Length: 470
Ligand SMILES: *Cc1c(COP(=O)(O)O)cnc(C)c1O
Image (cartoon, rainbow, N blue to C red; front, side):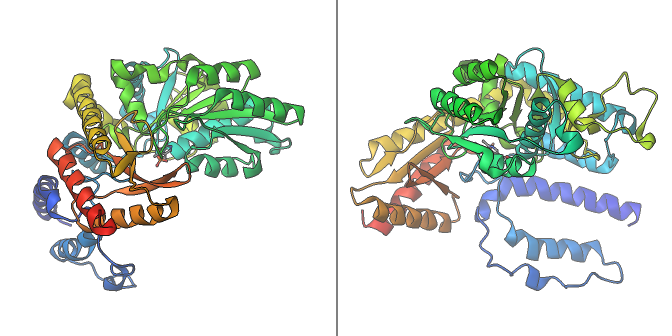
Protein backbone atom coordinates (compact mmCIF):
# COMPACT_ATOMS: atom_id res chain seq x y z
CA UNK A 1 0.00 0.00 0.00
CA UNK A 2 1.55 3.30 -1.00
CA UNK A 3 2.07 6.07 1.50
CA UNK A 4 -0.54 8.48 0.14
CA UNK A 5 -3.20 5.80 0.06
CA UNK A 6 -2.28 4.81 3.62
CA UNK A 7 -2.55 8.42 4.74
CA UNK A 8 -5.83 9.00 2.89
CA UNK A 9 -7.53 5.96 4.39
CA UNK A 10 -5.99 6.77 7.75
CA UNK A 11 -7.75 10.15 7.83
CA UNK A 12 -10.91 8.62 6.44
CA UNK A 13 -10.99 5.89 9.10
CA UNK A 14 -10.38 8.33 11.92
CA UNK A 15 -13.33 10.35 10.60
CA UNK A 16 -15.35 7.15 10.38
CA UNK A 17 -14.58 6.16 13.98
CA UNK A 18 -15.42 9.64 15.28
CA UNK A 19 -18.75 9.59 13.41
CA UNK A 20 -19.42 6.00 14.49
CA UNK A 21 -19.03 6.77 18.17
CA UNK A 22 -21.09 9.93 17.76
CA UNK A 23 -23.93 8.15 15.96
CA UNK A 24 -23.76 4.64 17.34
CA UNK A 25 -27.35 4.96 18.57
CA UNK A 26 -28.61 4.66 15.01
CA UNK A 27 -27.64 0.97 15.03
CA UNK A 28 -29.53 -1.75 16.89
CA UNK A 29 -27.42 -2.48 19.98
CA UNK A 30 -27.52 -6.24 19.45
CA UNK A 31 -26.66 -7.48 15.98
CA UNK A 32 -29.65 -8.90 14.13
CA UNK A 33 -27.84 -11.21 11.73
CA UNK A 34 -28.73 -14.89 11.54
CA UNK A 35 -25.99 -17.49 12.08
CA UNK A 36 -23.98 -17.96 8.87
CA UNK A 37 -25.06 -14.65 7.32
CA UNK A 38 -21.54 -13.21 7.47
CA UNK A 39 -19.66 -16.34 6.41
CA UNK A 40 -21.91 -16.87 3.41
CA UNK A 41 -20.90 -13.52 1.97
CA UNK A 42 -17.14 -13.98 2.25
CA UNK A 43 -15.20 -16.13 -0.23
CA UNK A 44 -13.98 -19.33 1.37
CA UNK A 45 -10.53 -18.92 -0.19
CA UNK A 46 -8.25 -15.89 0.14
CA UNK A 47 -7.73 -13.64 -2.92
CA UNK A 48 -4.67 -14.52 -5.04
CA UNK A 49 -4.22 -10.90 -6.02
CA UNK A 50 -4.37 -7.91 -3.72
CA UNK A 51 -7.62 -5.98 -3.58
CA UNK A 52 -8.33 -2.25 -3.35
CA UNK A 53 -8.91 -0.73 0.08
CA UNK A 54 -12.04 0.96 -1.33
CA UNK A 55 -13.52 -2.47 -1.88
CA UNK A 56 -12.35 -3.88 1.42
CA UNK A 57 -13.82 -0.91 3.28
CA UNK A 58 -17.10 -1.24 1.40
CA UNK A 59 -17.32 -4.88 2.49
CA UNK A 60 -16.52 -3.82 6.04
CA UNK A 61 -19.53 -1.53 5.96
CA UNK A 62 -21.87 -3.89 4.10
CA UNK A 63 -20.94 -7.27 5.59
CA UNK A 64 -19.09 -6.74 8.85
CA UNK A 65 -20.93 -3.81 10.42
CA UNK A 66 -24.36 -5.51 10.44
CA UNK A 67 -22.72 -8.35 12.32
CA UNK A 68 -21.39 -6.08 15.04
CA UNK A 69 -23.02 -5.87 18.45
CA UNK A 70 -22.42 -2.31 19.54
CA UNK A 71 -20.73 -2.34 22.92
CA UNK A 72 -20.20 1.42 22.80
CA UNK A 73 -23.95 2.08 22.41
CA UNK A 74 -25.38 4.05 25.34
CA UNK A 75 -28.22 1.51 25.48
CA UNK A 76 -25.69 -1.16 26.44
CA UNK A 77 -26.91 -2.77 29.67
CA UNK A 78 -25.90 -6.37 28.94
CA UNK A 79 -23.22 -8.50 30.70
CA UNK A 80 -20.78 -5.88 31.94
CA UNK A 81 -19.59 -3.01 29.75
CA UNK A 82 -16.35 -3.15 27.74
CA UNK A 83 -15.68 0.52 27.34
CA UNK A 84 -13.42 2.34 24.97
CA UNK A 85 -12.90 6.11 24.93
CA UNK A 86 -11.35 8.60 22.51
CA UNK A 87 -7.95 8.75 24.27
CA UNK A 88 -7.84 4.97 24.42
CA UNK A 89 -8.63 4.65 20.70
CA UNK A 90 -5.94 7.18 19.83
CA UNK A 91 -3.38 5.29 21.90
CA UNK A 92 -4.37 2.01 20.22
CA UNK A 93 -3.74 3.68 16.85
CA UNK A 94 -0.24 4.68 17.92
CA UNK A 95 0.38 1.22 19.40
CA UNK A 96 -0.67 -0.39 16.13
CA UNK A 97 1.50 2.01 14.19
CA UNK A 98 4.55 1.28 16.29
CA UNK A 99 3.82 -2.45 16.15
CA UNK A 100 6.22 -3.33 18.96
CA UNK A 101 6.29 -6.72 20.62
CA UNK A 102 7.11 -5.99 24.23
CA UNK A 103 8.19 -9.30 25.75
CA UNK A 104 11.26 -7.99 27.59
CA UNK A 105 12.64 -4.61 28.58
CA UNK A 106 15.02 -4.27 25.65
CA UNK A 107 12.32 -5.09 23.08
CA UNK A 108 10.85 -1.69 24.06
CA UNK A 109 12.08 -0.10 27.29
CA UNK A 110 9.22 2.42 27.18
CA UNK A 111 6.59 -0.31 27.20
CA UNK A 112 8.16 -2.05 30.19
CA UNK A 113 8.74 1.11 32.21
CA UNK A 114 5.41 2.71 31.37
CA UNK A 115 3.69 -0.50 32.45
CA UNK A 116 5.48 -0.29 35.80
CA UNK A 117 4.45 3.33 36.20
CA UNK A 118 0.77 2.96 35.28
CA UNK A 119 0.47 -0.07 37.56
CA UNK A 120 1.82 2.09 40.40
CA UNK A 121 -0.73 4.75 39.46
CA UNK A 122 -3.56 2.24 39.54
CA UNK A 123 -2.37 0.92 42.88
CA UNK A 124 -2.57 4.44 44.33
CA UNK A 125 -5.89 5.16 42.65
CA UNK A 126 -7.52 2.07 44.18
CA UNK A 127 -5.67 2.28 47.48
CA UNK A 128 -4.20 -1.20 47.17
CA UNK A 129 -1.63 -2.22 49.80
CA UNK A 130 1.72 -0.45 49.39
CA UNK A 131 3.91 -3.46 48.72
CA UNK A 132 1.90 -4.90 45.83
CA UNK A 133 3.32 -4.79 42.31
CA UNK A 134 1.42 -5.13 39.10
CA UNK A 135 1.49 -6.02 35.44
CA UNK A 136 -1.05 -6.00 32.63
CA UNK A 137 -2.61 -9.29 31.59
CA UNK A 138 -4.97 -9.84 28.69
CA UNK A 139 -7.98 -10.83 30.80
CA UNK A 140 -9.07 -11.57 34.34
CA UNK A 141 -9.32 -15.25 33.34
CA UNK A 142 -5.60 -15.28 32.60
CA UNK A 143 -4.72 -13.29 35.74
CA UNK A 144 -6.63 -15.77 37.89
CA UNK A 145 -4.87 -18.65 36.15
CA UNK A 146 -1.54 -16.99 37.05
CA UNK A 147 -2.72 -16.69 40.66
CA UNK A 148 -3.71 -20.35 40.80
CA UNK A 149 -0.44 -21.48 39.27
CA UNK A 150 1.58 -19.37 41.70
CA UNK A 151 -0.49 -20.63 44.64
CA UNK A 152 0.07 -24.18 43.41
CA UNK A 153 3.83 -23.66 43.28
CA UNK A 154 3.94 -22.04 46.71
CA UNK A 155 1.93 -24.88 48.21
CA UNK A 156 4.20 -27.54 46.72
CA UNK A 157 7.53 -25.79 47.26
CA UNK A 158 7.83 -25.32 43.47
CA UNK A 159 7.74 -29.08 42.98
CA UNK A 160 4.70 -29.20 40.70
CA UNK A 161 6.54 -27.16 38.05
CA UNK A 162 9.26 -29.77 38.31
CA UNK A 163 7.42 -33.05 38.61
CA UNK A 164 3.79 -32.28 37.87
CA UNK A 165 1.04 -32.18 40.45
CA UNK A 166 1.40 -35.18 42.76
CA UNK A 167 -0.91 -34.39 45.66
CA UNK A 168 -4.51 -33.22 45.95
CA UNK A 169 -4.67 -29.44 46.33
CA UNK A 170 -8.00 -27.76 46.95
CA UNK A 171 -9.37 -24.41 45.78
CA UNK A 172 -12.31 -22.44 47.22
CA UNK A 173 -14.67 -19.91 45.71
CA UNK A 174 -18.26 -18.92 46.38
CA UNK A 175 -21.22 -20.42 44.60
CA UNK A 176 -21.50 -17.12 42.76
CA UNK A 177 -17.93 -17.15 41.45
CA UNK A 178 -17.21 -16.49 37.78
CA UNK A 179 -17.02 -19.44 35.38
CA UNK A 180 -13.37 -18.61 34.65
CA UNK A 181 -12.43 -19.98 38.08
CA UNK A 182 -13.56 -23.48 37.15
CA UNK A 183 -11.85 -23.18 33.79
CA UNK A 184 -8.61 -22.06 35.43
CA UNK A 185 -8.79 -24.79 38.08
CA UNK A 186 -9.02 -27.33 35.27
CA UNK A 187 -6.19 -25.81 33.25
CA UNK A 188 -3.90 -25.45 36.28
CA UNK A 189 -4.17 -29.16 36.97
CA UNK A 190 -6.01 -29.04 40.31
CA UNK A 191 -8.92 -30.96 38.83
CA UNK A 192 -12.48 -29.71 38.89
CA UNK A 193 -13.39 -32.09 41.72
CA UNK A 194 -11.04 -30.19 44.00
CA UNK A 195 -12.84 -26.88 43.55
CA UNK A 196 -15.13 -26.22 46.52
CA UNK A 197 -18.12 -23.96 46.03
CA UNK A 198 -18.77 -22.20 49.33
CA UNK A 199 -22.39 -21.26 50.09
CA UNK A 200 -23.47 -17.62 50.02
CA UNK A 201 -25.72 -15.52 52.25
CA UNK A 202 -28.93 -13.65 51.36
CA UNK A 203 -26.82 -11.03 49.60
CA UNK A 204 -24.99 -13.67 47.51
CA UNK A 205 -21.70 -13.10 49.34
CA UNK A 206 -19.47 -15.93 50.55
CA UNK A 207 -20.15 -17.06 54.13
CA UNK A 208 -16.74 -17.02 55.82
CA UNK A 209 -17.40 -19.70 58.46
CA UNK A 210 -18.56 -22.07 55.70
CA UNK A 211 -15.23 -21.46 54.04
CA UNK A 212 -13.33 -22.35 57.17
CA UNK A 213 -15.43 -25.48 57.65
CA UNK A 214 -14.59 -26.62 54.13
CA UNK A 215 -10.89 -25.96 54.66
CA UNK A 216 -10.87 -27.93 57.92
CA UNK A 217 -12.75 -30.80 56.32
CA UNK A 218 -10.27 -30.98 53.45
CA UNK A 219 -7.34 -30.89 55.86
CA UNK A 220 -8.89 -33.76 57.80
CA UNK A 221 -9.12 -35.70 54.52
CA UNK A 222 -5.42 -35.15 53.87
CA UNK A 223 -5.91 -32.57 51.12
CA UNK A 224 -3.89 -29.37 51.01
CA UNK A 225 -6.04 -26.21 50.91
CA UNK A 226 -4.19 -23.98 48.44
CA UNK A 227 -6.16 -21.03 47.16
CA UNK A 228 -9.30 -19.05 47.93
CA UNK A 229 -10.75 -16.91 45.15
CA UNK A 230 -12.88 -14.16 46.66
CA UNK A 231 -14.97 -11.95 44.41
CA UNK A 232 -15.60 -8.24 44.72
CA UNK A 233 -18.58 -7.71 42.46
CA UNK A 234 -19.80 -11.10 41.33
CA UNK A 235 -20.93 -11.38 37.74
CA UNK A 236 -24.53 -12.30 38.49
CA UNK A 237 -25.29 -9.60 41.05
CA UNK A 238 -22.05 -7.72 42.01
CA UNK A 239 -22.06 -9.30 45.47
CA UNK A 240 -19.01 -8.55 47.60
CA UNK A 241 -17.31 -11.38 49.46
CA UNK A 242 -16.13 -10.01 52.84
CA UNK A 243 -12.35 -9.81 52.46
CA UNK A 244 -11.48 -9.21 56.08
CA UNK A 245 -12.84 -12.44 57.63
CA UNK A 246 -11.95 -14.43 54.50
CA UNK A 247 -8.43 -13.02 54.61
CA UNK A 248 -8.05 -13.92 58.28
CA UNK A 249 -9.07 -17.50 57.50
CA UNK A 250 -6.56 -17.63 54.64
CA UNK A 251 -3.79 -16.30 56.86
CA UNK A 252 -4.65 -18.77 59.61
CA UNK A 253 -4.47 -21.72 57.24
CA UNK A 254 -1.73 -20.37 54.97
CA UNK A 255 -3.96 -20.40 51.94
CA UNK A 256 -3.39 -18.06 48.99
CA UNK A 257 -6.01 -15.32 48.74
CA UNK A 258 -6.77 -14.21 45.19
CA UNK A 259 -9.34 -11.46 44.71
CA UNK A 260 -11.32 -11.22 41.49
CA UNK A 261 -12.68 -7.68 41.16
CA UNK A 262 -12.86 -7.77 37.36
CA UNK A 263 -15.75 -5.35 37.00
CA UNK A 264 -16.26 -3.65 40.35
CA UNK A 265 -12.61 -3.04 41.24
CA UNK A 266 -12.74 0.30 39.44
CA UNK A 267 -15.20 1.56 42.07
CA UNK A 268 -12.37 1.55 44.64
CA UNK A 269 -11.12 4.81 43.09
CA UNK A 270 -14.03 6.41 44.98
CA UNK A 271 -13.19 7.13 48.64
CA UNK A 272 -16.80 6.29 49.56
CA UNK A 273 -16.39 2.81 48.00
CA UNK A 274 -12.95 1.99 49.41
CA UNK A 275 -14.57 -0.17 52.06
CA UNK A 276 -14.93 -2.99 49.52
CA UNK A 277 -11.18 -3.48 49.94
CA UNK A 278 -11.22 -3.69 53.73
CA UNK A 279 -9.00 -6.63 54.56
CA UNK A 280 -6.89 -6.08 51.41
CA UNK A 281 -3.70 -6.56 53.43
CA UNK A 282 -4.49 -10.30 53.34
CA UNK A 283 -4.53 -10.46 49.54
CA UNK A 284 -1.81 -12.39 47.77
CA UNK A 285 -3.12 -11.31 44.40
CA UNK A 286 -5.80 -9.05 42.95
CA UNK A 287 -7.21 -8.47 39.50
CA UNK A 288 -9.52 -5.89 37.99
CA UNK A 289 -10.25 -4.95 34.40
CA UNK A 290 -9.68 -1.40 33.20
CA UNK A 291 -11.17 -2.80 29.97
CA UNK A 292 -14.53 -3.08 31.67
CA UNK A 293 -15.21 0.06 33.68
CA UNK A 294 -12.13 2.24 33.25
CA UNK A 295 -12.71 3.29 29.65
CA UNK A 296 -9.68 1.48 28.24
CA UNK A 297 -10.05 -0.67 25.14
CA UNK A 298 -10.21 -4.41 25.54
CA UNK A 299 -7.82 -6.02 26.40
CA UNK A 300 -6.34 -4.57 29.57
CA UNK A 301 -6.54 -6.46 32.84
CA UNK A 302 -4.57 -5.20 35.84
CA UNK A 303 -3.00 -7.94 37.95
CA UNK A 304 -1.32 -7.18 41.28
CA UNK A 305 0.66 -9.49 43.54
CA UNK A 306 2.04 -9.16 47.02
CA UNK A 307 5.20 -11.12 46.26
CA UNK A 308 6.44 -10.75 42.67
CA UNK A 309 9.26 -13.17 43.50
CA UNK A 310 6.80 -16.06 43.76
CA UNK A 311 5.11 -15.08 40.50
CA UNK A 312 8.39 -14.80 38.64
CA UNK A 313 9.70 -18.05 40.06
CA UNK A 314 6.56 -19.76 38.80
CA UNK A 315 6.88 -18.44 35.25
CA UNK A 316 10.49 -17.54 34.56
CA UNK A 317 12.45 -19.07 31.74
CA UNK A 318 16.01 -18.28 30.75
CA UNK A 319 16.74 -19.42 27.24
CA UNK A 320 20.06 -18.14 25.97
CA UNK A 321 18.49 -16.11 23.17
CA UNK A 322 16.46 -13.99 25.62
CA UNK A 323 19.30 -13.08 27.99
CA UNK A 324 20.40 -9.44 28.11
CA UNK A 325 22.97 -7.44 30.06
CA UNK A 326 20.34 -5.39 31.95
CA UNK A 327 18.18 -8.24 33.27
CA UNK A 328 19.11 -7.49 36.89
CA UNK A 329 18.06 -3.83 36.62
CA UNK A 330 14.72 -4.01 34.82
CA UNK A 331 11.41 -5.82 34.77
CA UNK A 332 11.06 -8.39 32.03
CA UNK A 333 7.32 -8.91 31.97
CA UNK A 334 7.59 -12.14 29.97
CA UNK A 335 8.23 -13.72 33.39
CA UNK A 336 5.04 -12.29 34.91
CA UNK A 337 2.57 -14.48 33.07
CA UNK A 338 1.86 -17.10 30.47
CA UNK A 339 2.55 -15.44 27.16
CA UNK A 340 6.03 -14.60 25.94
CA UNK A 341 5.07 -11.94 23.39
CA UNK A 342 3.20 -8.98 24.79
CA UNK A 343 1.22 -6.09 23.37
CA UNK A 344 2.06 -2.55 24.42
CA UNK A 345 -1.08 -2.12 26.54
CA UNK A 346 0.18 0.44 29.05
CA UNK A 347 -0.02 3.27 26.52
CA UNK A 348 -3.82 3.35 26.28
CA UNK A 349 -4.16 3.24 30.05
CA UNK A 350 -1.70 6.12 30.38
CA UNK A 351 -3.63 8.14 27.78
CA UNK A 352 -6.94 7.45 29.53
CA UNK A 353 -5.79 8.30 33.06
CA UNK A 354 -4.05 11.49 31.90
CA UNK A 355 -6.93 12.66 29.72
CA UNK A 356 -9.69 12.28 32.32
CA UNK A 357 -7.59 12.61 35.45
CA UNK A 358 -8.51 10.57 38.49
CA UNK A 359 -11.20 13.13 39.35
CA UNK A 360 -12.74 12.81 35.87
CA UNK A 361 -12.81 9.03 36.16
CA UNK A 362 -14.40 9.27 39.60
CA UNK A 363 -17.13 11.51 38.19
CA UNK A 364 -17.99 8.99 35.48
CA UNK A 365 -18.15 6.11 37.95
CA UNK A 366 -20.22 8.15 40.41
CA UNK A 367 -22.69 9.01 37.67
CA UNK A 368 -23.15 5.31 36.84
CA UNK A 369 -23.73 4.56 40.52
CA UNK A 370 -26.29 7.36 40.66
CA UNK A 371 -28.10 6.06 37.57
CA UNK A 372 -28.27 2.60 39.12
CA UNK A 373 -29.89 4.04 42.26
CA UNK A 374 -32.35 5.90 40.06
CA UNK A 375 -33.23 2.71 38.19
CA UNK A 376 -33.48 0.79 41.45
CA UNK A 377 -36.07 3.37 42.53
CA UNK A 378 -38.10 2.75 39.36
CA UNK A 379 -38.19 -0.97 40.11
CA UNK A 380 -39.10 -0.45 43.76
CA UNK A 381 -41.92 1.92 42.93
CA UNK A 382 -43.61 -0.40 40.45
CA UNK A 383 -45.53 -3.20 42.21
CA UNK A 384 -45.25 -5.47 39.14
CA UNK A 385 -41.46 -5.66 39.50
CA UNK A 386 -39.12 -6.74 42.27
CA UNK A 387 -35.46 -6.30 43.07
CA UNK A 388 -33.53 -9.57 43.21
CA UNK A 389 -30.28 -8.46 44.87
CA UNK A 390 -28.76 -5.47 46.66
CA UNK A 391 -27.49 -2.75 44.32
CA UNK A 392 -23.86 -2.54 45.45
CA UNK A 393 -22.52 -0.83 42.36
CA UNK A 394 -24.15 -0.01 39.04
CA UNK A 395 -25.86 -3.34 38.33
CA UNK A 396 -29.56 -3.71 39.10
CA UNK A 397 -30.96 -7.26 39.24
CA UNK A 398 -34.73 -7.45 39.02
CA UNK A 399 -37.63 -9.35 37.54
CA UNK A 400 -41.24 -8.93 36.61
CA UNK A 401 -43.40 -10.59 39.26
CA UNK A 402 -47.19 -10.41 39.26
CA UNK A 403 -47.59 -13.28 41.68
CA UNK A 404 -47.62 -16.17 39.23
CA UNK A 405 -45.62 -19.30 40.09
CA UNK A 406 -41.85 -19.05 39.61
CA UNK A 407 -41.60 -21.30 36.56
CA UNK A 408 -44.15 -19.16 34.72
CA UNK A 409 -42.33 -16.02 35.81
CA UNK A 410 -39.08 -17.43 34.46
CA UNK A 411 -40.69 -17.80 31.03
CA UNK A 412 -42.28 -14.38 31.13
CA UNK A 413 -39.07 -12.64 32.14
CA UNK A 414 -37.19 -14.43 29.39
CA UNK A 415 -39.78 -13.19 26.89
CA UNK A 416 -39.55 -9.67 28.30
CA UNK A 417 -35.81 -9.61 27.61
CA UNK A 418 -36.38 -10.87 24.06
CA UNK A 419 -38.99 -8.20 23.51
CA UNK A 420 -36.78 -5.46 24.97
CA UNK A 421 -33.77 -6.49 22.91
CA UNK A 422 -35.80 -6.61 19.70
CA UNK A 423 -36.37 -2.86 20.13
CA UNK A 424 -32.75 -2.39 19.08
CA UNK A 425 -32.41 0.47 21.56
CA UNK A 426 -31.43 -1.52 24.60
CA UNK A 427 -29.52 -4.74 25.18
CA UNK A 428 -30.16 -6.66 28.39
CA UNK A 429 -29.02 -10.09 29.52
CA UNK A 430 -30.06 -12.35 32.36
CA UNK A 431 -28.77 -14.52 35.15
CA UNK A 432 -30.17 -16.90 37.70
CA UNK A 433 -30.35 -15.83 41.36
CA UNK A 434 -31.59 -18.28 43.94
CA UNK A 435 -32.82 -20.41 41.03
CA UNK A 436 -34.93 -17.58 39.64
CA UNK A 437 -34.59 -16.09 36.18
CA UNK A 438 -33.32 -12.56 36.76
CA UNK A 439 -32.92 -9.58 34.45
CA UNK A 440 -29.60 -7.73 34.76
CA UNK A 441 -29.47 -4.00 34.07
CA UNK A 442 -25.72 -3.35 33.98
CA UNK A 443 -25.17 0.40 33.78
CA UNK A 444 -21.62 1.46 32.97
CA UNK A 445 -21.29 2.40 29.33
CA UNK A 446 -19.32 5.64 29.09
CA UNK A 447 -22.00 7.53 27.15
CA UNK A 448 -25.09 6.29 29.00
CA UNK A 449 -27.05 9.23 30.35
CA UNK A 450 -30.12 9.53 32.52
CA UNK A 451 -32.44 9.71 29.51
CA UNK A 452 -31.10 6.37 28.25
CA UNK A 453 -31.89 4.77 31.59
CA UNK A 454 -35.37 6.31 31.66
CA UNK A 455 -35.99 5.19 28.08
CA UNK A 456 -34.81 1.67 28.94
CA UNK A 457 -37.27 1.53 31.83
CA UNK A 458 -40.10 2.66 29.50
CA UNK A 459 -39.18 -0.08 27.02
CA UNK A 460 -39.00 -2.68 29.81
CA UNK A 461 -42.44 -1.75 31.14
CA UNK A 462 -44.00 -1.67 27.67
CA UNK A 463 -42.44 -5.05 26.92
CA UNK A 464 -43.75 -6.50 30.18
CA UNK A 465 -47.24 -5.23 29.38
CA UNK A 466 -47.08 -6.81 25.96
CA UNK A 467 -45.72 -10.14 27.16
CA UNK A 468 -47.71 -10.54 30.38
CA UNK A 469 -50.71 -8.40 29.59
CA UNK A 470 -49.77 -6.49 32.72
C1 LIG B 1 -15.89 -10.31 33.55
C2 LIG B 1 -15.47 -11.09 34.71
C3 LIG B 1 -14.46 -12.05 34.60
C4 LIG B 1 -13.85 -12.43 33.29
O1 LIG B 1 -13.14 -11.38 32.74
P1 LIG B 1 -12.21 -11.61 31.47
O2 LIG B 1 -11.30 -10.44 31.55
O3 LIG B 1 -13.10 -11.58 30.29
O4 LIG B 1 -11.52 -12.90 31.63
C5 LIG B 1 -14.05 -12.71 35.73
N1 LIG B 1 -14.59 -12.44 36.93
C6 LIG B 1 -15.56 -11.53 37.09
C7 LIG B 1 -16.12 -11.27 38.45
C8 LIG B 1 -16.04 -10.83 35.98
O5 LIG B 1 -17.00 -9.92 36.13
